[in-house]
Length: 158
Ligand SMILES: [Zn+2]
Image (tube, rainbow, N blue to C red; front, side, top):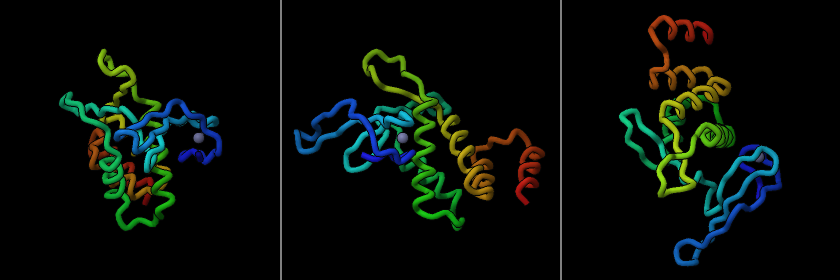
């Protein structure tokens, strides 16, 4: 099973479980090379991750939400499907690295991360990928403290 982040061919299976009454099997894997953890079931997904919103509420991590934010920033920008997939994988890997174990006793393996951190990670990779998308995304997430620092960033890319 190829690693979606570094494309290394070797991943080890951490565990397998039968879901939907045995119809499907989900395998949790870890890349031997970059240690990215993912599961295989129809598509690669991040498991057991909660997102902590600004008001403190938690919700399950949904890849689509992250993808939609990135897509909006990249609208009409020259970034192809492959590059976009790579971007999402890199963002998700960093989300895993920066997430921490949730303290709740009921869900042992559950991890969580703040939405602001996800924003920072996305900004970091967009900056490398496409300067216009980076500015768009960063302005939406209000990561600039004031209008001057925003202008400075604009100047850098123009
Ligand atoms: Zn890897």
